Each structure stands twice: as structure tokens, then as C-alpha cells.
Image (cartoon, rainbow, N blue to C red; front, side, top):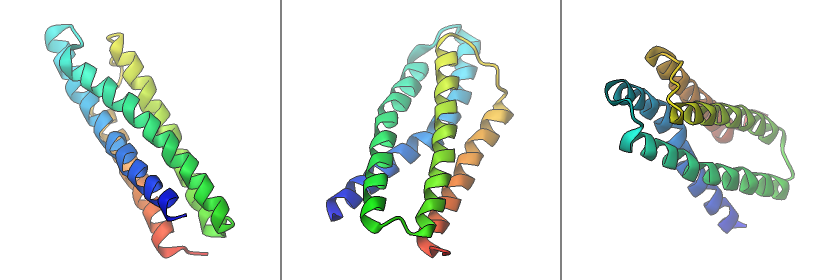
Length: 136
């Protein structure tokens, strides 16, 4: 069962990189697009990062469910799963922003994207707290 936990942790690390990086990259992509009128390499990199880490997120969630089943789903794990679900919804929203950006639509302000980025940090801290403390 250790190998499932290792895969889970590796995929979570990769997924979290994208959750933190893509909203910030959207800010720079937006600025670059305003100057050039084209998506350019930054847009391509942002899209590729999102697409690659989407698969990591799916694997992280599936291995987390598998590992949770093996643990018998203690109460704290239900809370963790709920927080991860919220983070997954946040990530899907990021994907929507990336898809719109590919079409040249940048509706959100830099400030919104910064706050949006920090929301994922708060969610991650909450998940880590639940995993480490296991409050119930």
C-alpha cells in the first residue's frame, strides 16, 4: 500500500504546482497579450502546464480515494476529501480561465487573479492541517 501513498503524494505535488502557478501565469499572459495581441509562448506554456497537471490531479484524487478506502475512511478523511473537492472545483475554474484566455478573453483583473491564486493557498493549508492534526 506504500506505493499508492507515494504515487498520491507525487501527483499531489505536481498538481499543486499548477494550482499555484497557472493563475499567476495568467496575469503575465494577459499583459503579454495586451502588448502583442497574440497568445505567444507564455500562453502555450500556461495551457500545457494546466493540461499536464490536470492528469496529475485526476491520479492524485483516484489514489487518495483508493488509499482512503484502505484506511476505512476515518472522520478526518471525510473533511479532507471535502476540502479537496473544493480545490478541484477551483482548479476546474482555472481551466475555464485558461480556455477563455486561449480565445483572447481576459475578463478578470490582475487583482482578482492574485486573490484567486491566494484562495488555493488557504485551501491547501486547510488540507494540510487536517492531514497532520487529524482533528477527529
